Structures are given as C-alpha cells and as structure tokens.
Length: 610
Image (cartoon, rainbow, N blue to C red; front, side):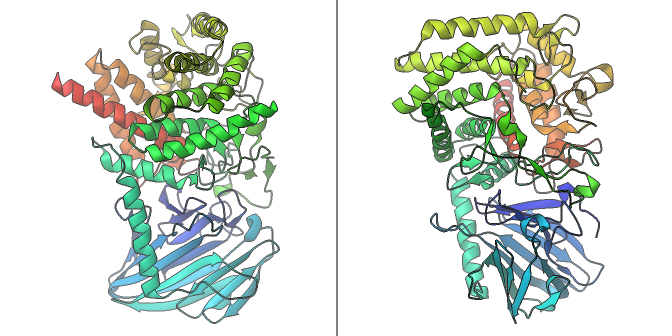
C-alpha cells in the first residue's frame, strides 16, 4: 500500500490525543492515550510496520471525499460507487476531566444502495516495538502488549488476520454499524455500544464543538476558515494542563527523503504565547485563561532558580530526550524517525519576549495578572536585561554554532518593553532604569549590527548577509513602524524571488536560504506556512500608508487559502508542487492564519470605507 500524501489526512481528537484519518479510511497515526504516548497506529511513518485501523470499500471502483460536520471536529469520509454510498463518521467523545482514557468511534452508515466493506485493525504498540497478543470474543477484541491493553468493540464478527483482526460486511441503505476503539481493562471485553448510543455520543460531541466555536467573535471575511483554524488549535490542546502541542505528529519530513524530521508532540513556550494572542483576537477568552495558567505554572518554577526552557512535555516535564526509531523507514523513506526533541536543551532567547507579550496582552484585554506572576515576570525581565547579549540557537532551533540572531534580540527588546508597559500601567514595582537602559541598547544594536548595507535589509544575525523571514515580525511587535524605510527595504528584499536572493517563490515564503545558512543539517525544505502569513500581515500593515502593499497582501493570502488541504488544515510547510510537508496540523500555521485574516479583513474594511 503506497503512502498517502500528507495533505490527504484529516484529524480528530478529544483534547488528550489526536488521530490522523486518511481519505482512504485508514487511521495511520494515533498515540494512546495522550499526544506524547507511544503510537499504536503509525503507518504514516512505516507503511509495513507502523500499524493502522482501516475501514474502506472491499472492491475497487469507488471514490472518496472528506468533510467536517460544520463548526465541529467530527470528520466524515464518504465512499461512493455506482452500486452504493457509505458515510463513515469518525470522532472522539470529550471524556470527563477525571477520566484518563479515550474512545475513538467509527460510525458507518449506508446512504444509498449497498456496499461491501472491509475492516482491518492492526495495532503496533510502542512505535511497533512491542509484541501484541490478540484475544477475540466474537465481536470484541483485546490487544495486549507489555504496557497497554486496547479494546476494539464491533457490531460484526471479528477474526484474526495478519497480526491484527479483520472483518468483511455489506451494508444496505439505511443500515448503520459502529466500531469503538478504547482502553481495555485487564479482565473484560468492554466498550461495546449500540447504534443508538453511538448516535447519542455523536450528538453530544457535535454539540460541544458548536457551543465552543459559537463564542468566537470574528465575523469578517474568511469566517469559515478562521473557525476551522480555531477548532484545530483547540484540538491541539492537552486539556488537563492547558499545554498546546506544536502538532499532532512526529517526523513527517520537511523534504521528502531528507533528515529535517522532528517530533512536535510537545508544548513550546512560543506556541503557547502566540495562542494567547490569536485567541484573544477572536474572543475565545476562556482558552486564553487556560493557556495563561499553563504559562504561569511554568514561570513559577523560576522561584526554584530554574529558568524557562524552550519546550516542555504536555504535563510540564522538562526532559524530552531525543532518540531514533531505527526500525522504521520514515514517511516515504524519510529518515531518521525521531521521538523526543533536543530543543529542550537549547537557549532560545526569543521565548522571553513571546511570554512577556502574551502576559501584557492578557493583562490589557482579559484579566489583570496576579502579583505572584508579576514577581516571576520581574525575575524574567531582570534576567533578559543581564543576558540579552548572549548568542543563542534562534527561533529556528539551528543545530550548529550559536549566533546573535536578530529575531532573538528583537524579542528580548519586546520582553523589556512589555514588562515596562505592565509595570507603568499597573504601578507595579520594577527596575525601570535597568530595563530601559537594556531595552535601548538592544534597539541600537539591532539597527547597527542587524542591518546589512550590502543587502539593504535586516538580516538573520549580527554581521551576516542572509535574509530571515522572522524579521517580518518587527512591525507586528512595534519594534519598527510598518512604513519605516528600513522595514520597507526588508520587505522588498524578502519579496524578491528566491533565485534573485529573496525568500518568496510562487507566493510562498521560505524561512531562510538553507544553502546560505549553516544550521547543522543537510538538504533543503519547503516554504514555511507561518512565514507566508507573517508576510501577509507585514504587507497589510504597510498597506495602511500605501494601498499597493495591501493589494499584494490580499493576493498572497488568497494564494495561501488554496494551500490548505481539502479540510482547511495546514501542515508546517508547502513543497514546490503545492504539496503539504512537515508535521500536521501545525499550531503555528493556524495561529498565523488567524492573525493575518483578522488584520487583513480590518485593513480591507478601512480601505473600502475611506
């Protein structure tokens, strides 16, 4: 069975874990019972050894399509043939907060004629490393490994097949059956539900998601896509702690056959901070409360003399030791397959600005921050004032020598600027003179050493000449005015075609030129979706003084609307043929989409009214 394109997957979840469901009806990725648990289905990373749970027509000649039930994370895969049509509704009920379990329900209904279908369920526990014992009791099965007991309840008889279980069955118009994947007890075959019960679970799940998205205040253009991005972000939340995973998957390649394959099932401080900003913008304030609680719990660790780190486990753990799954071939042969992420050991100075900006926006637009959090943030600001001159690994987490990355310095400036704003607005105690002095020193250093006369643009690191798309953030964080000549020159440089030294190619933006930047890795990568949305927003802000920029922003944004997959999901990157690359769905891409959509919609409305 060939690998499906990365863009052919939808995602379902319950805010504890998530599953990727292909257009062909195969669940090729599921970690159980949490995002960061070992996978039980991993065929997307090894078609032969990874394991899958597939329901599909048993004969050839059918076509397939997928859609979400409107304003939900309930996924429908529809199979159509001349003889009949079947709809499979996949969803994960939202379990009570006290229940550390998950259920995945596949509800299959024939809507026309008849169709013969085949089900195969082949778990491969612990990334395919553990043996799996199968116990069948007619319509129920328990898969037992050393660390996991997994149940499959069925409305049709099951039989052992190829290291898993399978079944063939025919549905006539109006007939419905269900499969339920669930955590199993040690002594019982449980989990079976009736068709009526599955409908009740479905209605409850649909109602949950629709009530949640109804709180969104965005009413502008592209409302459906903004809703889809918000719903996707909510799927990437680990509800027990409020942590946001960077993506639901691990090791999907940024270049087919390349080595830039990373485990994104963890919570980056950057992503959590950006989430607060994006969701506050569209009225989802309860979620901002939850994410701020997550950030506050991590900041509290500084009382023990431990500084914030770049990325954490979804339960707050600090050790994310990176290792390789050498027994898996990787997506379409893209090795290595990694679990864990060595970025937890890196120094990335930008996270301090992102955390402080989130606290500033939360304090301004939602609730005043607590005195305890302010004491932690003061300590953070003091540290930045004393350490901003360090070299670091940057936002792109390079695995080569540290540099004085311009984006990192800008975000250090943001950390001190926002700390000063909070202190002044609330009359809170602060070392004003120290922070002001350091803030101004950073500003002058960036303008003197981060600006390249040769490139006539802000560059990647002090003294360098390489462009970097992260500098597009400067006007968004108010470091530079959007129409400042230096900012406009930087926009001009980035917007040149890649063969001409720029970063823009076919309406998409690369992070940087991998051929010019020593990042410690071989090979290249696709364009970075978040960076394209950053360019849209930078052009939008410049467009308030020059409508030509606004027209360019709209053109780029419309192109990016077409880059989403059939369900409105964005992966990390896009290839030269428009194909999704990297882990999916990626939080940063959807966060940047929301911000770009909100700002562009507002600017267009202002332009129309002028």
